[in-house]
Structure formats: C-alpha cells, structure tokens
Image (cartoon, rainbow, N blue to C red):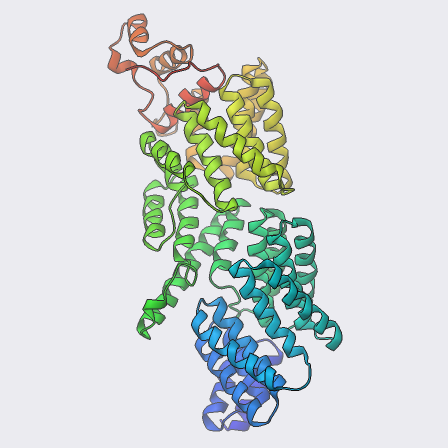
Length: 559
C-alpha cells in the first residue's frame, strides 16, 4: 500500500471513529513518510483512544515540535496540553511537570493572549486543587473561563468549568458543583469537543460525584457515556480510578454480573499497565494512584462476598491489600459472615479509631454498625450511627441519607425501639429505592420485617421478608437467602445452615436474657451445647435478629 492510500484510509477511518483502523493506517503511512501536523494529531488521538498511551504521547510530542518549527506557538501549547493531561491522568507527575513548564515558558515568550493560555491555566488549577490551594485554583479556573468566552473555545470552556466545579466541590458547594458537572457532561457527550475530552471529563465527573455521594448522578452519566462508547467498539476511554468507579456503580445498582466483568477487566488492564512499566524500567514510579489495582480487586471482593463466594472474596481482598488498598471494611464483613466475629470486631474497632476520607468513613461507619450489633456492643454501634447521621446532615446526597437512616434504624431495632426503628428504616428503604440500589433496599426490608414482627404485625413482616427474598434470589445473594431461611426456620435445599428445633429453643431463651448456664439447666443440656450462637453464619444472624427486637442486657453473654 502506498503512503497516499494508507493516509487516505487512515483519515477516512478517523472521521468514522474507527480508531483502531485509523491508528493502523496512519502508523503505516508514517513509516513510509513522516506525517504532517494534522495527521500527527489524528495519530495521537486515535492512539490514545485505543489505549496506546505511549504512542499517543510520542505523537503529541512530535506534533508539538512540528508546531514550533512552523512558528505556531499556540498550537504547540495545545499539543503540550493534551500530552500533560495524559501524563497527569497516568500518574506521571515528573514528565507532566516538565512539559507544563515548557508550555508555560513558550506562552511567557508569546506577546499575545490566546485560548491556549487558558488551557495552561486549567492545568495549573488542577495542580492547585491537588495541593489543597483552593483559592489559587479558583482564580486560575475563573481566568480560564474568561479566556474561553473571549476566544469561543469549546474545549477550554469544558475544562475551565470542570476546574471550577472541582473547586466548588472542595468548598462544600455540592449543588453548584453538580450543576456544573451536568453542564459539562452535556457538552462532551454532544460532540462539541475532542473525543479524548469525553473520557477525561467523564472520569473527573464520576470521581467528583463519588466524593459527593451522588450515586444517582454518577450512574446516569455512566449510562450516557456507555451509550456513546457503544458506537465506537475500538474505544478505550476509561483508565485508572475511572474503571474502578464504574465497577462500584454497577455493583451498587444491582448489576453484579456486569460489575464483576468490569472489575475483572480493570484488574487485567491495570496489571498489564504495571507490566509494561516494569518492562520499560519504570517500576519505581508505580503507585496506587497511578495503577489502582488494589481498588479494583476490592470491588471484585465485594461482589464475591455478597454472592457468598467467600474463598474468592478472601483471595481478592488479599490482592487488594497486596496492591496497596485497605481490604477493610469489606474484609471485616466477610469475617463476620464466616463466623469469625472476633476478627471482624477487632477490625472495626481499629478503623473507628483511625481517620478516613468522608467517602471511606461512611463505609466504615455503616459496617461498624452491623458488626457491633452482632457483637452486642450497642453503645459503640450507636456512636457509629450518630457519627454517620452527622455526616449525612451536612449533605443532600440521597445515598448518604439512606445509609445513615439504615444504620440508625438498625441500632434502634437492636435497642428495642421497634416503632422508631420502623420509621427510620422506611426512610432508608425509600432512599435506596430513589437511587435504585436494590440489594441495599432488600437488606432494609429484612430489618423492616423484624421491626413489624416486634410490633405484632406479622402479616406486614411476612410481606417485607418475602419482598426481600425475591430480590436476593434475583441477585443470587446466597448468604442473604440463607439468613432469611434461618430467620424463618426454613430448611435449606442442601440442609446446610437450617436451624433445628433445639437450636430455635436455645435462641428463644438467649433472646430473653438467660445465661448459657441457665439455658442448659432449663433444657437439660450441657453448657457447651447451649453456646451455639457462633456455630454458623446463618445461626448467628438468627440469634442477632431475635436479639434485635428485644432490649439487650447491659453485658455480654457469660460463658
């Protein structure tokens, strides 16, 4: 094939957004004769969009140098902008800062203002946000937006507003931030900007929504961008943390099979990226930020846990830890489900004494409520629920409000206030329904069933438990189905985990507050037989559930 034919086919594929073919044909043409500036930029874009990051960086660098040869400083700066943005997103600050300094020097030597000066300000604003200098970031983003308006530059407008949105989010103005996020996403999905900007902006917006606990908005834009991606089968627009966020959104939305596929893809892609860096001798630059493999494995572990694949969950949590991500609080919940409640309790007590980001703290507090209720340490469970309520009070996010209401309802139920618990849990259920989180909503319905039962409304209790069962079965949440079987005394298909009549008698007496020794004397059994609560996850759940609907004793069971 001649250079002219390869070039023509490459340009045609680029216009059709057939990125892999565009990259292949443009690369072939480039091997025959060096590409011109326009085609170098096409090569850089198509390489980036199919995941050939180093090839993209090389093309941008060549384009930058060609612009300087042609004495086109603004266009050279724009090439540098895309290169710096890519390097920052890949977690390579040293190379990024070097190129940023180069573009700033070029602009300092250029006499006239231009839109590209605003692009550099966008990068400067991003750096200030990372460093926590929000005032400086606000100033840089504001100046970038002014230049975007002045030069009518759509890409600068999008990135300038993104920087402004991130500033608002860091200042606690969630409403202002999400309004800008929506405006930005409309612009990028409408095709007003380079396709590179779609992936970059989407990842930044999803990260912002996650930090603001705005699951509904994150899911909505994930669906919109996914539809955009489906029209371009070669596209690889999502990288790093963005891959992990997508898996988390799918998991919370009840799309567990999709979430698992996304998490496995993230693990594979990120490990492959690490291998490429190690092969090139850059292993010393690896970091959890650059390659969040641990976070991807954590999402994979969470899916295995709720499905009851405990061995796979354990392995994935270990991988998360290996790659620098804390396996908690998920590992603690796994240990609780495995009957290793002492380990779960020790883990959450340690976590409660540590500091986390607000997003991570919310998860720790919610898990702590579950674990400490099972451990019958209701004062600590109450403290965790109250802290979560304080966190939710400062947010309008339905996710955080639902999580808090669920924790409060769980504690009230354990404390014996069934009426107050049902009121709180009903609000939690409505919140989970609002953001379409079916698994969490079903878990709340189990608690509602227990609350209704405690109030003597057995009919309502059965309706709640039946509704929860249908969701658990649809999701293949095997541990939750087993717990419902144990709670209702329903034999399992394989006979495992079902409660015997004697075990039910023991549970009933435990729930009245009798000690193990008293139970043994009343039923004519040994004290060891009476100590059956830790025998299985299903039995412990039944024991804890029965205890929830009665006011607990002030001390633990005596041996």
